[in-house]
View: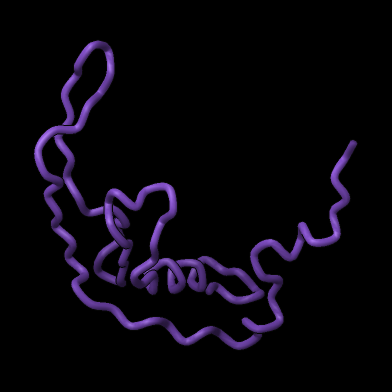
Length: 96
């Protein structure tokens, strides 16, 4: 939630306020939390080995999440006027 006028600081504030975000393509790693003192979005170690030319995980994932609890951020002023994800595609006509 960096706000309508993106700046370096608003970007950092938004990144540092990520709280229990569920990544749809990396759910194996668990939810993502970040904070002003924790800039590591994925905090899990998965051992892999090469088997028949492919990397294969073995053993249990080892988590070391340092941000144990977080608080959802308050949206910045003007947040409700920002286009939401997918809005830009509403009026797009598919090409034949």
